[in-house]
Length: 278
Image 1 (cartoon, rainbow, N blue to C red):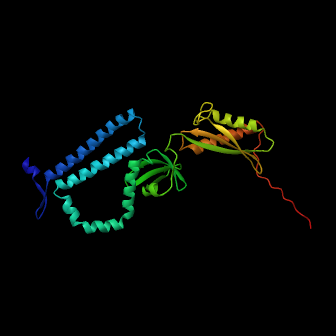
Image 2 (cartoon, one colour):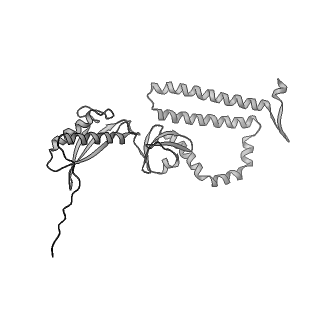
Image 3 (spheres, rainbow, N blue to C red):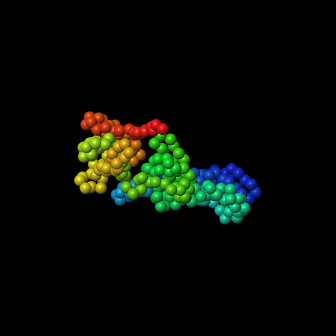
């Protein structure tokens, strides 16, 4: 057994790599995987009792897994006889060159650490960045994966979440308020219009139905007297933030159908042209 563990796989001067070193590294990697699996299970039970959201759970577990793998990597180097202090001292010039050439990558790495610690954006958050709306599927150390409404996966460098302005629709709460705008012809019964709009939204399964006076209670605003129409806005709350454009579309279908059945006209812009004869 000792002969097997001490069998020399590679030798260069004073450096010797044995099968025992490789076996130790394999056991180290297996131990790290088992430890992270157990930690994830323990955290899941711990966080479920305290109602911690999934995004925060993923961020904390990600940081712990990075820490474990860094320690495992450094330990593996020591096992095979590569000392960290010697490695750093011998490659100082190389590290300086890499630092100058890879500034953007280091910026993304540091940004990823801040994102995971602060939790400003988390897994399953719906965000708007550069005019694009998407759901965050994962937050990694250098990049994050964002799924757009068109089903396209976007890889976003983490520094964008730090230096650019983003809208996080899920940051403060799971529900968010949206609106649908509509105009009706002059002479329409505005109280009837208000009643029709509220009836259209009452039975929608994805709209939060609050009680009277409740924060999430849908309501209608008579916004303005427009050039060609009386302008209204129908406000509602929903938890289905990522699919809100489908909800708006369904509401517009229902509004148009209800207006037609009640004789309410949605006008189109009109212009009067006066021709002067000289």
